[in-house]
Length: 532
Image 1: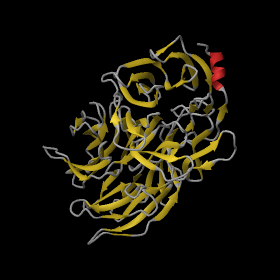
Image 2: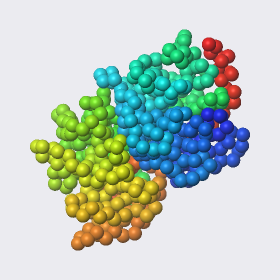
Image 3: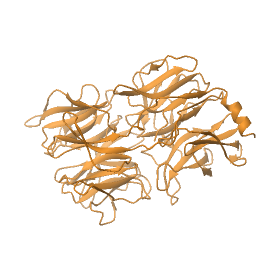
Image 4: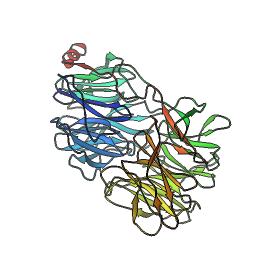
């Protein structure tokens, strides 16, 4: 879903997502040199983009928008951004960005602060998300793609005035970019297409022409163009990002399940262990029956639904959905026999995370631009009046109530990195840090005597004594393998006996960049291929 390569505006430097061993991070190199340098502090980074002067690189990581000096230094958090889907750094020191946690585009100061909403998908047109924005020259309009329909790969090119809010659909395509030759370039499948573009009227001049074939799409297009006319792209073609469901024991031994290849995320085992609710294509919740090896859709295909959570008795599923507009919380019968019912009325983005063992309380996270991301509780009574549980200026996420209902484990970036903490669910606000070298994607063992979390590709375990007081043990590694990562929220689940983990194994195509092609003075060729 992310574009993982960028070239600076002056065309002299590249930055891209790479992997060395178990570590995924940003790497940079000068176009004129062969030496490649990792950028410290950019672990699990996605969607890199340059500042106009080329001195900074922005990126997404840990459900945050961050920036780091290209010459080296500590990364800085700018704001919350769950699942960065592209960003554009303007000359007026502001950044327009898209994220999976927001329906529309937002803008934030490049120095950090509270983001403001810029766009919102048009109600009733079936749009799911807006992505890959570019602030056009003059910074009076923004270009982006709007993705909807039945797959995440479909796109419509849109331009919107930042002054009047007037919006114009330009035609089918994805990852649109205006380039200094006066052309609009974009992808259709694995091809790069171009058309002359009237920047003042925001109109295409003539019909698009195919100019390059074989650009990798995953499904985001892997290319970038500098202001000086250099093109960098990943050669290949449209690639299927997919995962298989895999049981993994405590020693890392794998047992694949007989499922078709899909883009799975956030698997959640039912309380009886007979099925799993899982998100497909980051937009629809399905259930998988282990005994019959059958996948069945539960939520509607024309809305984006995510973050499934089972009620303790297994009768219902809570989840987030944009079927009424902004991402809010709903629940429905787990067998799909009834309609979804909205649980809250907030206009802020909310994602359910954990029920209390008695099912009376639903713990969820709320993305508030004024206060980062916080943890709230929704009583499941007739009033259903939410109340804050943990509100700070930091990003908290992945909250999980312990099996005995006495403790709350959660992830916070208070230290500067994501770490796992535990505090009383009700009572004292004192928290105890559990992880010692970064941690997220936490889960309680069903018996409550262990806490699991991931640190990079390592699955960690901590022995926990909760009575009469909390006494955590020393974190230790169970196994280290490459499986699909989450954020503060987990992208796996734990079996009822605590001996196995249901993980998501990426296909061989779901890997960081292995080859880059750079074409110098490419805009001169573009002018010949598609004359104005």
